[in-house]
Amino acid sequence: MKLFYSPGACSFAPHILLCETGLPYDLERVDLGRHQTAGGEDFFAINPKGSVPVLQLDSGEYLTEGPVIAQYICDTAERRDLMPAAGTLARYQVMEWLNYLSSEIHKSFSPLFNPALDAAAKGAFIQALVKKLGWVSAQLARQPYLAGKDFSAADAYLFTVAGWAPYTGVDISALQPLQDYLARIAERPAVKAARKAEA
Image 1 (cartoon, rainbow, N blue to C red):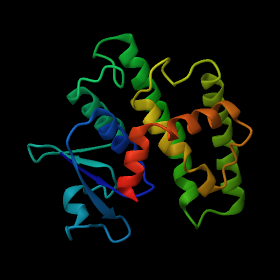
Image 2: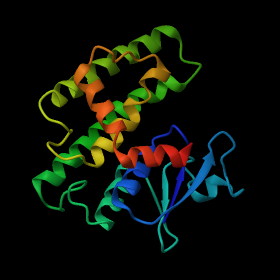
Image 3: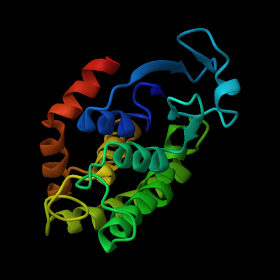
Image 4: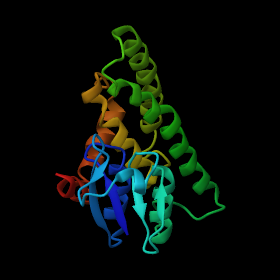
């Protein structure tokens, strides 16, 4: 498989999972400004949506959208700790988190990367985002990971998007359970390996 990624982007979450599972994979960096891969390909020819991550399968087919790629990686590796078996309540709970992170957290960060966003609008987005992250932090005060006792695909996603806070003016310093969680996940060997590979 090949993961098309951009440093600092949400493609870091499936990269963590590839490292967690030990599946063999290649990496190809994408310049999202020029929409070109490191190999010189037009990235729009690979993903007309123009965004990472993209996972090229052994068959040559492509998967897009981070939460779907996460499920594919975990299922392929048969890692039920990262993504429980289909049809189980535990599976739906991890998917519930993936959906919340995608629709409420990830997409709330997105406008903050737009330099054209005026200060008032930015402040409103930040205020709403801190409230959502506060709710997430409260859940983490009760259990070590989003879906319970095990690190899952949802945790790789939250770690990635919450890591954008310092770069977007989102102050999460008062959210101690979230801070402790992020520090703990940063020490996972798979996270360190993915960071080193993308450096």
